[in-house]
Structure formats: structure tokens, C-alpha cells
Length: 353
Image (cartoon, rainbow, N blue to C red; front, side, top):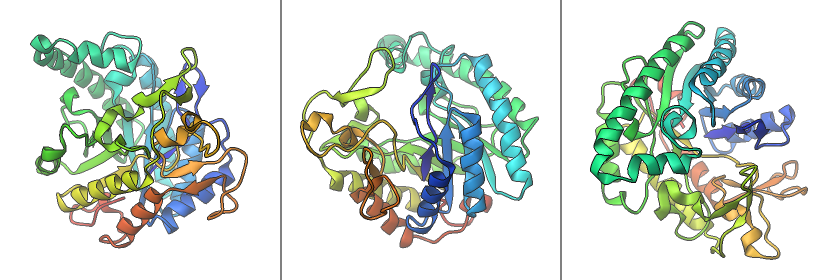
């Protein structure tokens, strides 16, 4: 499971409230009720990452320590990695099983790899001209791999555990400096007919395969959109905070649940070593069942729980959220799967989830 501690963009953090007691309780639910044996802790604040990772380790979960830089230049990314690598090593020295994730989709989420002031502009720059797309990807691969070489060396100076990077396939990562190959794999309608074969091919690579970033929202047709699932959201032009949905989209929790269940089956049967659902809860996308359905941001939220505004849930009366259908689907999949084992530590052990 992926657990969000708050994304930091231009000094603003997406998760306003971070209560260590709540974090520990949610991580315990992830372990006990979702039957997860590993958790990817993501975010942009090193203190929060260390706090949540420590709680997860105390609960016996394998920890993927994942600083998630956004809109940073390469030198600032390296500074974040230095800080987090030292924190991750302290946790590992205390006996925790820790994997360090040296960033996520760096080329489109940050500055210095592609032209553009936003991820959307960068992707358009890369994909917008089909006649030079292959050349542009080769050039991008050179830039990305040069940076990842520096990043891996920086992290390994401070961290002695396993190291990976959460990549997009078009970044053409050279996996030599890493212990595992990790891809953000999101199935869309355009690739659905060849998705399983693609996963199988990646799993046949020279190093264990992890999959991160896969998930979808709870509105009808969201799973078909793949990585474009959040395009239905209107954002504040200054803060980039979600404001409302652009139109009325029918709630479809069953569709979100089916999507996750189907992908987890693919990953389990096609040789994936570790898989992390994106994600437990996404701050800023509250469930508003009353009033204008365009204000119900949870329909576009990728969390498997729906966040309530200032009120408690019924299933977990001490939490300000309620499970979606996807929560039950993931729990059922993990409960009936190969069982908890901390898969990433042993090549022949079951899927880490």
C-alpha cells in the first residue's frame, strides 16, 4: 500500500494535518485489515517521512522510504535525497527492512529534465511532435540516467539498504545502479489488451520488478483514462489545489474496486516482486455526498478510503474517513493471496503488497 504524508509544491503541503497517532492507527489498519506486509511512505517533508516510516517499522511492515520531489531543480532533489537517506539508514540500523526509492517520475514532475512549467507541459513537449518523439526520448534518457547515477551514488554514501527508482517507461532507465526495477504502471483502455504481456516482459528483466503508482478513481470510466484520471478536476491556478470537478461524473466505487483487483491479479501471476496500490488516502479530495456532485472531489480521488470533512466514519469511529468498495476488494485480494512474507527480501517469496 502507498501512504501519503503530504506532497510539497512551492512550499505548500497537500496534507494539512499530520497527527502521528492517527498515522500509526492508519498504518495498523493497513497491516491488520488490508493484510499488507509492505508500505511505501511518500511525501516531500523529511520529518513526516521519518515519523511515518518509523511507525510502519514498529508495526513490522517493510518500509519503502520514498521522498517525492515536485517542481524542484536537480540540486535540490539531491539535497532532499541526502537528508532522507540518512534518516532511512538510521531506521534500517534499528532493524527495519527498508528500501529507498530515489524519486518518482522525476523527468515530468520536476524541473531540469524537460522544458515546461508543469507536468502537462513537459509531457506535451515530449509527445507533442511524433516525428521527433523517438529522438526526444533518447535525449531524455541520457539526462535522466546521468542524474540517477549521481542520485544513486549520493544515496549509497549514506544508506546501506536496497535502492530503487520509480520510473516511467519512456525515461529508459539504466538499472545498473539499482537493486530493483520499479515502474509506475497504469492500465488505460489504450493498452488494456497488451498490459498483461507487458508486465510479464518487464518481470523477465535482470532484476526483481516492483510496481508503484497504479490506481484509479471512483467515477465511471476512470479506469479507462489511465494516467489521465485526474484531468476531470479543476485546480486553483495559483496553489494547484483541487477546487471541484469540471462536470458531473457518476460515482462508481465498484469500478475502482474491480480495476485494482484485476491489476493485483496480473501482478501476482506474472512475476512481479512487489506491488503498491496508489493509494490509501489522498488529502484534498474530500467526500461531499450532499449538494452539487461536482463538489464531491472524492469521486476523482485515488484513495481507497473517502475522506470526511470534520466528522467520523462508521466503520472506524475514531477515523475521519470511510472505506470505499476498493478497500474491501484490496483486503480480500491480499487475504486470499499467497500470504504475508516481506517478498522483496527473498527472490522466491510471495508478492509484497
